[in-house]
Image 1 (cartoon, rainbow, N blue to C red):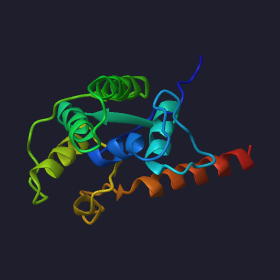
Image 2 (image 1 turned 180 degrees about the vertical axis):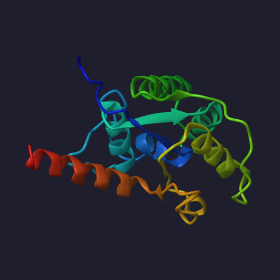
Image 3 (image 1 turned 45 degrees about the vertical axis):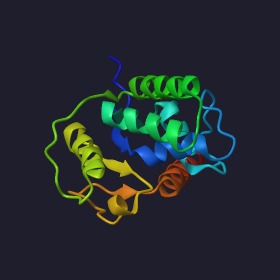
Image 4 (image 1 turned 60 degrees about the vertical axis):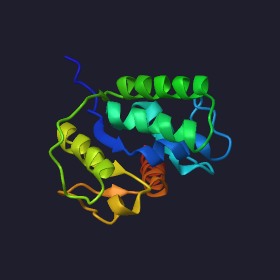
Length: 170
């Protein structure tokens, strides 16, 4: 009998982490960097961790995808075709990691910003272990209902350190 491998831990990334992964520096989103070592773009490193489909399962919502696309198109001025391709890649990453896309009910009102509450709705609905965000309104709530809310550099650094330690003790 073969025992199943470890179950990926559910995580939620907010819109700004997903935008920063492609809006900062050189970040080809078909070839995510994966710690170790970390790169110069912590948000891209975070998606590299998800791309590995080893420890974490990324969960997204239609709300997160739409807003990621809107920010990339209107603020970053990313061409529409690239936005569409990126959103497709995110959906594929989520699915391949053991997560997916779900549209949770709107039940959370813990944050003064409606948009941030949609991130928290998703985290609650999928039982996310943690939330990765560069939004001060969300990170200031950490831990939110027992879930750490950490910034992309923290997440990438923790995974990097954990992977290095595992390699050392093998």
